[in-house]
Length: 230
Image 1 (cartoon, helix red, strand yellow):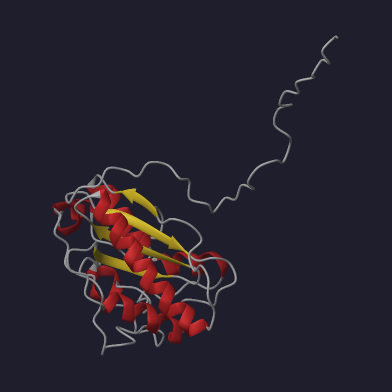
Image 2 (tube, helix red, strand yellow):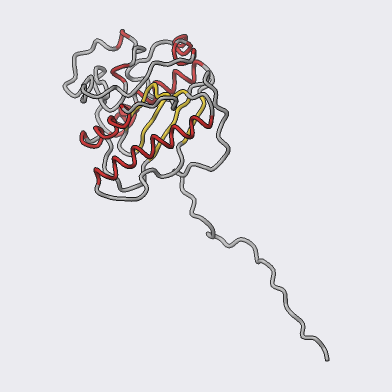
């Protein structure tokens, strides 16, 4: 008796639009860059869509409380700025493992406090953190200007320019000693607050790496309107 023939179907190729939707905000799951204690890092955490503004006083208070917690042996946060839906950090870490564990711990602490405040559950951050190595004095200077003047960068693109005396209260700008004095003696701005929560620790530590302590200064101190880069 003749055996029935079987038709083997082959894969017809990729279909247009198939697969996971691509978004411009997703952080690619690629190998992390090499991390050493001598190279500062610019780290960004982005929130999922639909959460309240992080710059509201009640919300920022929770962020500051997390930053004020001790982080012995953890990633070192030297500077930061908090925007409406993302956070920027300039940090130091001794290894990629320490960086990953430190940022994971920070993300968990932030998520717990924010979810409690928002009376919700579920994810708070959109994806893994994004990290960029700052290997040269110029890269460090640009990152510092980008982070500390980040709010001005957003506002200047959509509305009136902020006065030169404005010091972002949702950042570590008030504790930064690298401002160019030629540009910081403008008339006081009523919106400029040195620290909205003086009872809390500033949440930052002094830099250890040469690049973040002194190296970047060879390219000049930072002015309030230095907002390019990143």
